[in-house]
Length: 130
Image 1: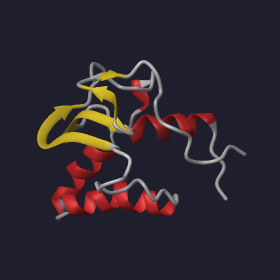
Image 2 (image 1 turned 90 degrees about the vertical axis):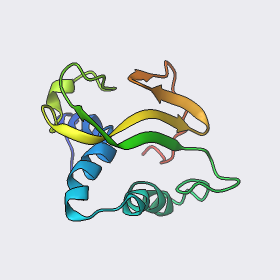
Image 3 (image 1 turned 30 degrees about the vertical axis):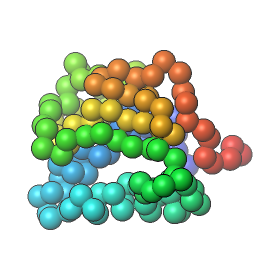
Image 4 (image 1 turned 120 degrees about the vertical axis):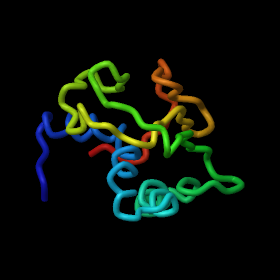
């Protein structure tokens, strides 16, 4: 069992928004493919969480889609738009990353586009509160 402090949770949440570019930036050096990324960050998490309508682009599934360019590089600096209010705690600040996310859709709703986030949450809770 692991206990996480509020500080740990902030660091985890802060870095989740960069998981795709970080995994791609470092993974491609070791032969990671786009198919592996889809498996690691979409199909498997949906399967583990028991979300049958997520994890793959298929007829009848919920449209959770990230629009990104795997060849686009960017510098993660204090000027880069981040969702969490504490950009200085990211482990990746100051790094050059590949795989820039341009838009994100959750359930078919646009929640992020070119540095701007949706003003309201449109996702649903997938895990029960304790």
